[in-house]
Length: 194
Image (cartoon, rainbow, N blue to C red; front, side):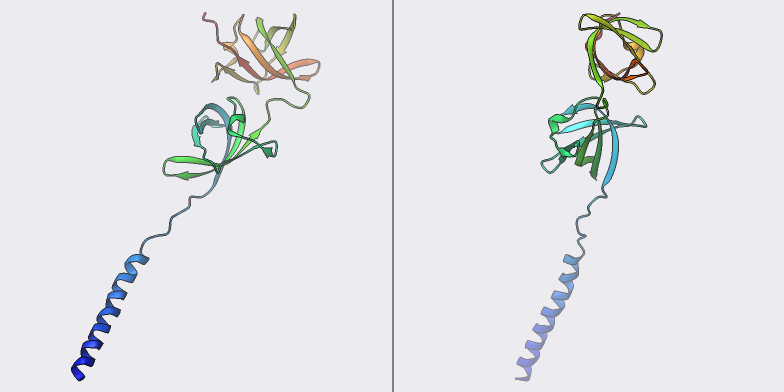
């Protein structure tokens, strides 16, 4: 009987010891780590399938990936991926997963033109100095001024004032200041080769 009691006690001790040895091993696995949410603002320079590239104020280009959980906002209203346009300004709340930036919320900032802004479409007739372009729009010539805040896109690529050539079709977002049209954004069609 004594021998049976010792055998049972020995088996019980072995079971408890075994449980103590295996329990810490499963507790050593770290919980999945969620990355810190980040936020940035920039201008879209390229879009692709479920991803887009943004250029920040310090001229860095970052690629953001979207997924079905990504929220899109346009003027505080629901938006969609198709609303992302090259040249548009966005703010992105995102998380980093490995070497990828995953967008949680994308807000499209409508800074392309104020409420009283004007859309001018036409072909370049001439360039005057370093701050004026004359466009034929609706059968008349319109003088548009540029300033350091004017942004340029030609064939969906960043450009500059010097890229404007006679004959280039332009789409200009401008606002009226002191009886002059000032371009906020100039989008050019295919550039003619010099």
